[in-house]
Amino acid sequence: MIGRLNHVAIAVPDLQAAADQYRTALGANVGEPQDEPDHGVTVIFIELPNTKIELLYPLGDDSPINGFLEKNPAGGIHHMCFEVDDILAARDHLIETGARVLGSGEPKIGAHGKPVLFLHPKDFQGTLVELEQV
Image (cartoon, rainbow, N blue to C red; front, side, top):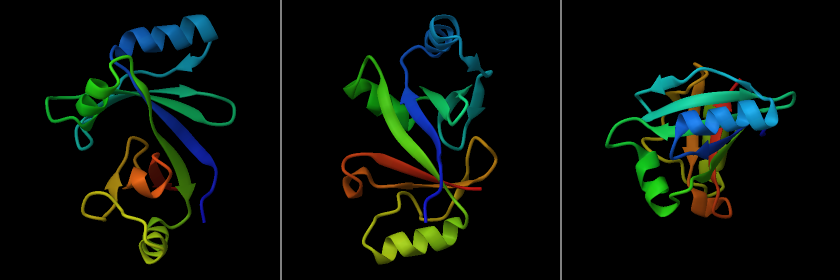
């Protein structure tokens, strides 16, 4: 059901410093900041030959990233995103197998302009999983 790894998301306490570090120290192709108000984050994508890294920074006081950074002040891996061909079929299959879909269970439009869903980390060995329809 799952396809390729689309990205690994890292929550960061200083978005510009993190972007500069990837650009300068690693020579990475670093994109521009992009606000995603529906998800409460500002993101920067780092393009790699085989996947992406998504730097996440809180956008507003209600951002879900605020709580993560309170527990992990230096930042850290927040989630992994896998591609799926049909997000509704993937959701229904996961629910049938006992996985919990976060939120209303209806896909939202993600940072790439495609439907996304998040799966409860307790159902995936402590890892928050995002599914993105390709």
